[in-house]
Length: 286
Length: 286
Ligand SMILES: Nc1ncnc2c1ncn2[C@@H]1O[C@H](COP(=O)(O)OP(=O)(O)O)[C@@H](O)[C@H]1O
Ligand SMILES: Nc1ncnc2c1ncn2[C@@H]1O[C@H](COP(=O)(O)OP(=O)(O)O)[C@@H](O)[C@H]1O
Ligand SMILES: [Zn+2]
Ligand SMILES: [Zn+2]
Image 1 (spheres, rainbow over the protein chains, first blue to last red):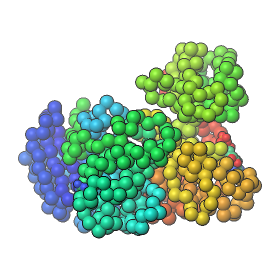
Image 2 (cartoon, chains in turn cyan, yellow):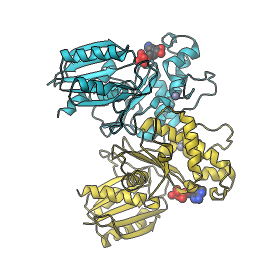
Image 3 (cartoon, chains in turn brown, purple):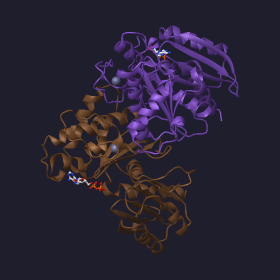
Image 4 (cartoon, rainbow over the protein chains, first blue to last red):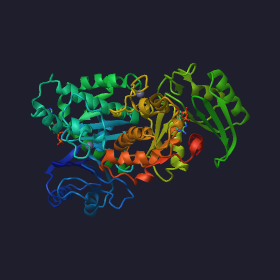
């Protein structure tokens, strides 16, 4: 028995095949260009490396409502060619096997819960802070789906009055993503986020916004752990700053787990998503 | 077979017993005074009306972490005598039957999902706006528990700059509860909320705050429905105002269900909680 995984991102797709012990036996990166080209390469990879079940974590927004006519589609993405694209249907036509279909951040949350930072827990949130901000969650051991999937990057947070940057979200201007994703740092300070010194006040402001997101996630979801990944979170100094401002903002109202075990970096790194896909596919074969 | 329910509130406990068809055969209201007095009356009610399983929805904060040493306790409540009170343990000592233990708002969400506004759905949020603001949820058909239970009243929302009222939450001042619970209305306008005219601008401000909560709940939980109950929500004119401001704030980013079916009033009214308790207890007997 072989298990398949696709982590479908806006710049690249990662395809992987593992055995039943989740040891990866084949892996390929495919650039995200047109659906015809990218999906052609994906399908030929799995023709060469056939699998018995597959987990797919896709960039969004996607339709995860099983009774919807467009279930399995990528929906309102600005990415040319991918809007209203029947991703899951295309895969099903090529390979008639069981699938799990969800977001890139939900599979990362699942991977971290089973084999990463949140092992042994039943719930966690995974937030990626990169070109955008995305969030996924596992609750009671299950992927968080409702009428759709979470869009945690668009939480409405409090804009620091001293921060004159207006935010770049085309829908909300100064939502979480508009104020705290990588491009917000670059536009606010007119330089690459990577080039800001570790003790630059930029990180205190960034931590303020991310701490607010943690407070709102805590009081709405009560997750056992909040895990951060993505390019911006490579700045390790953010973690103590977020924890400190989180504690201040929450003001002791809710007895969260110990803060150093509550707001933490991703443990599986770039493998969180693929790991989650494989685990979810594996469960389809039980 | 008989099924029991306790909806434990800060001013009164409602105890009920039903048959297997959930037809209520006995019911009693008991004022919330001291644990000894109130729980004594609760226990003697169920001695007269024995049951085979029981659902309890309690005012909080409570400990819902099954592996915790204080599982089943009411924890940090300011209510004299009830702090660190072993509610579930007291019941178990009196009656050795299966229990479901959760918050008053989680049971209301469950009741609404199974027999109220959200029938046929798998997820919903229930928010009560009264003396405080509390929120519960059902996700994938299950009560939302994580490290603890949600405390949705304490979301950090954006304080309208034109609103000079500073908020009354002792922890956060101007969190959702601090700005939008009944006492906030009373302190801001120096009169009972009930006496404000239906077209008073107070309701537009109230709707702004509640709409923000709906946006944050939408992007974090993706619930299929958001249901409002509690004294303040008796002001029916709030619903169109909340829906309108919600649509404006979300700016079309997420394709929620049709707004009139998405943000709705509680359908079971004061029976939502007891109904949820009975349903949860009933499942213990399957
Ligand atoms: N070491 C770093 N420090 C700060 N910001 C970084 C770092 N690495 C990447 N970034 C920022 O993260 C964003 C890219 O995010 P990343 O998670 O790497 O990719 P993507 O979100 O496109 O998948 C860019 O805005 C970049 O400036
Ligand atoms: N018809 C009404 N219109 C506006 N506010 C109301 C109304 N009825 C009750 N309230 C307000 O709701 C609060 C009481 O909430 P309620 O849900 O009735 O009880 P509790 O939260 O204590 O269980 C009070 O602050 C009161 O002013
Ligand atoms: Zn946004
Ligand atoms: Zn508060």
